[in-house]
Image 1 (cartoon, rainbow, N blue to C red):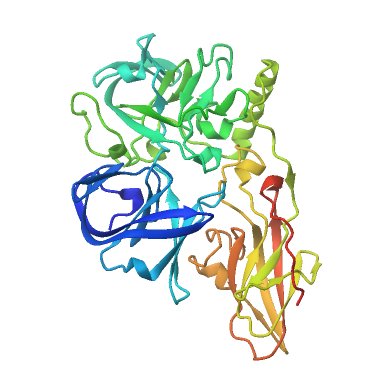
Image 2 (cartoon, rainbow, N blue to C red):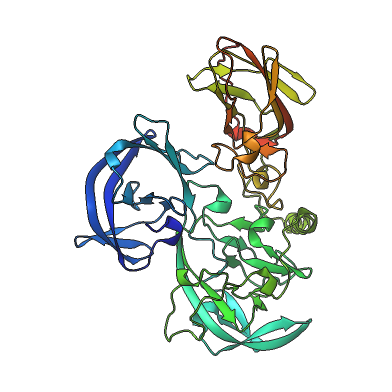
Length: 471
């Protein structure tokens, strides 16, 4: 079955289908239909036996045998491969109640087997909203009025030239208000004069990943959001957006701002074309190596720009639309066992936290507060992962034996961990599985975790203290 990041725009599959309703995180599956012909009309519609269904949000990674689709009214559709027995599974919705980690957990009844279906974003193409005025031969034209063959102004080696438009794409984005602002799909509004006098010459609306050309490099708009002169406009729940492609990736001018033309990285099919067939119908699968200028998302480059625009916004007397978060470095670190028992730290020695592990426990889960650095520190930090604590060395001592634990450093699929990046250390995602291995029966063990980094955490995301049983 196609993954949700690759839902077919046409054609059919023989799949199982069901409805899911969720109340207080308890999900109920109903209307199960097995081996039905599911025909996909486009990227938001499919039919079953002549009945048309509309979906918006999708959950499920590449290769999933099960996917979940939002039904646009608060319920969900479930599609699975035909050999999946839906009745054998339970479905838990972790996309609700403002959860930062947005996913569904699918568990097979009577086993410890589970599947995590992550949210699949489909609205992050870097684009312009309708009304954006593109520079054309020294004048301007609205982006929605551009056509293949038009000559638009581009910046080449500091001089203005013209290049031919080879493609104009249009698509629709639906905001996902249950997600953090930078992931929800809201457009970014850059108010008049936000970057400099007359730049932009009117309010500019672009998608978060669209890049501005600043100091010789491209920078995504999301990394400059300051809540005053540059902010997510939440008045848009859905909107059309456009992108303009030239023969080669180019620096163009929109609303008086130097920005980018479309860089075809393989997402062309998410757009539709008004009018004639495009001049370049095939995806070119370009990369930033093919761009008109380098992409720079380093904090050292972006933060000074961010601070510059913040100072300008304050000088303009613009209102602060979002308050800076209150943060803490307290991790609230503790463990849980499979039986639900909570184990608080015994003590901390330098950067090692020690836990007494009761007999019979061979797996624990490392819990802590979590945050996303782009929120807790600032959008100029290009790290949007949900981070708990950075675990270095881990060892367990029972009887006269001390063993070093390493599975969390190698197993990429181990639940609750972020990607493996810097050996020998790895970030948790707030609830990380740590296998302890075989232990001698009836022995109490001492677990030592080296915590190399923790926080900052946004106070509103901090877990309340739980009543714990000290081993």
